[in-house]
Structure formats: C-alpha cells, structure tokens
Image (cartoon, rainbow, N blue to C red):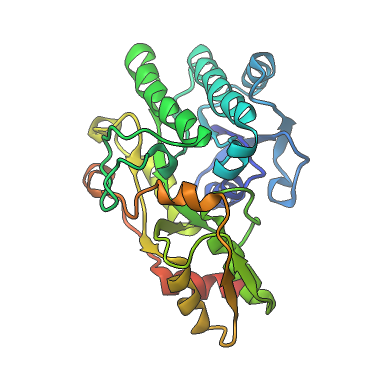
Length: 308
C-alpha cells in the first residue's frame, strides 16, 4: 500500500482527486489544508499545513513519510491579483518547500498542477505549444511559470520525479469554485440548476480552453502512473477537452434548462482571460502517456445537471 500526501485537499481539485484515488488505488492518504476538515476527508488522516512554512512542511513529511505527493495548495488567478504577495509566497515559496521536502524524505513521485495562466498575450491563440516564450501577465501565471522551471531543475539536479499538467478551466459539481478566471462556467451551470439568472463577468464571445473534472482527474492518475522513460516533458504537459465561449455554454445549457437567463458585465477578469490561449497543443500528452477524454461539452453539462 502506497502512502499519498495531498496538500490543499479541501479545494475544488482536492475533493475530486481524493474520490478518484480512493476508488482506483490501494493507498493510505494524508490530507492537509489551512481550513477545517471536510466531508470529503472523513475517515482519512488530516493535518493543518500552511505550505509557506518550511518547518510545518517538514514536520508533516517526517510524520507521514509519503511515497507520492499531490501538491494542490495554490492561490488562483483572480485572488492572486487581489493579493499578489500571498500568491507569490504560497505558489512559489510553498512549492519550493514541498520540492525540498520531497528530496529530503525520498519521495518517489510528486505532482504539481500548472495552468494555462503561464501563457501571456504573445502566445499563439490556437494550439498554444508546450514550449513557449510568452510572458504571463498575472502573479498566478508568473509563479506557475517559475514553478514549471523548478520542476525541471529538481528533476535534473536531484532526480526527483516531479510531474505537472497545465490544467485549463476545470468544471466540477462537488466543490463550489473559488477565484479562478474560468470559474464562470461552473457558476453559470450552478445558477441554471437553481433556476436563477446569472451575470457573467466575462464577455459573451470570450473563448477559453476547458475540461470536465472527471476527465482531468482520471488523466492525472493515468499520467502519474505512466512510464517515466516515455515522458519527454519535465516542465508541464498541456491538457484540455474543448473550447467554448460564455455564449456557447449558455446555448448548451438552454437545451436542458429552457428559459435560463444570462447577462454580461465584464470585470477585471476579462483582461486576464484575453491574455490566455483559446486552445492548447495536446499532441505530446497523447503521444507520451496516452491522454484522452470522455466528456464533450454537452455531456459535461448534462452530467453536471444530473448531480446538481
């Protein structure tokens, strides 16, 4: 039985990842977060952990001695612009603390998600490549881009098997979204399910790459169990399922919820969204570790409504 440590376990990704791990892997799981234990972590060992603290981080590793680590603790794009220093310390200092602890305690594998936020406005809008020279415009993107370089550095210098996927916007029904620029998609579907109208903070014709959480988590587990000798990327691989605009999502929702109403009042997140690509080149993920998906947009919306 392997021992798995998850940081940021109470977040949107953490709740889904725990469920997938419990259903597919024989593992002992330790969950950590800066907030209280939730129903998703019932029955599992849970510890408070502020990843900005080197001492607290090493204390957790010393106690648990994990084989695999999923480092999910992060400050997302919109929150990061409200408090850039917090984003810097959590996303960079916290990640370095985790990387160093993994080296010190001989962790077998480390997963840290990256983001489409690492791209800046100079990147190609269609099929943005894995290797790129664009400069991100948010503190979130800056810290995640630096993180990707750290992953390759720790792999080459310390032989740490650290892996990363650049997640697009993730759609999930289990945990309400927090402060990501792409979270309008979940918000819109949730409002429709409740029978209330929705005011979207992005313009109706703003395309962004997205992915259903079920596909994202299944891909993450598949990626973590893939042959390391076949991995040609040690920064982060691109993954995505589909691209849509708020208007296209609205039109899809109408197939299931006729009469649903949306209006559009773009705010500061519009500028963030416009700096990101519309789609990503996922060819290396398909070639190196067999990335594939099960949910298109209509199936995603249908499944969201079936649970909400």
